[in-house]
Length: 551
Image (cartoon, rainbow, N blue to C red; front, side, top):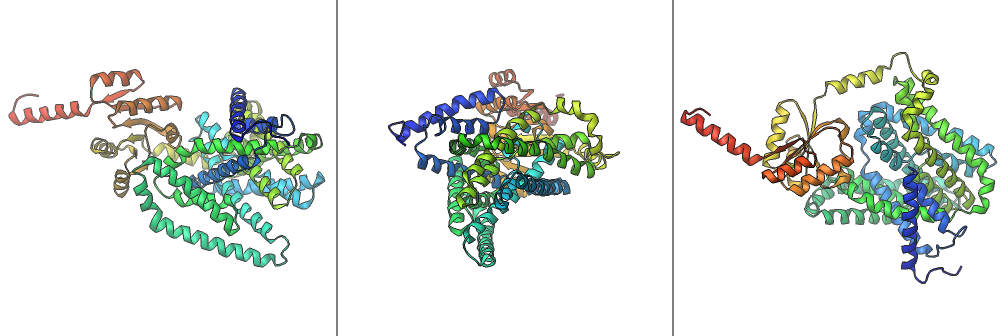
């Protein structure tokens, strides 16, 4: 096909402009950008305008985007969430995976698909989008709600399972045409074990102290994270696991360091930018001439995902002692397939297990379920109120587990997030802890972070000026956000970000002058602290008490 544009740079520029326009329309319609970007791919692909000709360049950017996506997933792999949620995350995650894959296989087989194709389609229907769900829950301020924590718990279980599936499929692809499949599986296990053991040694003895030095330069820290993700992705490809698995393990290897939140927050924009090209490439590969034959299967499979997945989650949560409302709201988060489903389909296509029509079917199901489930989650409360009388079947007479968790929450003390752990901040933290407050300290100095960790403080490496970092904090549970940092621009940025995140608690910041204090008050601070004024007042009180004069 003759290129439409004279050079690749112009073509990429046009793609970005079209993506920005279609993305704006998607946001206006309250749709995730994934849907808009796939639509861009269809629009600029050979089926419509035929603008995409720089396949190699788009494919390279798409692969980098997938690597960063898997890296960030591994980086945010918080096993603590699974532990704190107890068996509910594992039971719900594994139960939903088993139900969807088994029933989905028989539905796909009944629609006339071969066994291998039906297996791929069934597995693709199993996984839900962590990125979309966390974004929607964050927008609705429900990440810290019980159903939000349950949903994130079983989404983590799904992420772990999809990585294992990718390893298995890659090994199967390597073994195609090889009669000794058992030997190939053993080889993959041995190489995987050695790879993970090597990463474990690096995590234990090298990565944490090395990153402690890098953290003195935030730009260098992020550069190393990107290089590490791509390097281990390439290593995974050479070892026969696929670049996705290597990038995921790269993220896991850094997840135990105190810098994971900052790295993850700073990579979100780059990840989303590069993933744009994956979805454009995916949409461009969708052959509209075959869509008519796929409409009926796509609708059947979409209804199964939109209805069947929430029902199984509600059934499991109800049996475990949770209220029907919690089960319903958590169940809605699995009413769509994810970007991993599309990546899995692309992997199957590259391995020769499925054809382009099957990948197109999976993409259609993704478009339908992601679009529909987004509105279901956004309007979950009115939807629940309408169908609540029919949901009694999914609730025990007494929701004992949920009641117990509510009692545990009530017994915990008020939570304060404290930015800045210098002398003033450390003194505030110590005083708050002595008075029964829970304190989560945040600082951008790796030495201060490590020192407070050794003193058994809850502390994170982070930047008060980074709005994405705030999404990693449990703002829904926080009574006070307190900044002991004296720089006015930092505190103004923090106040602005908290307002954008719809933070409902109180905010105290620090200022050295009355003029700065007035500006911070106007920006929304409930309280402005002046350490010099407090120190001077305390000094005069001590002076007068020693001299015997009344204070």
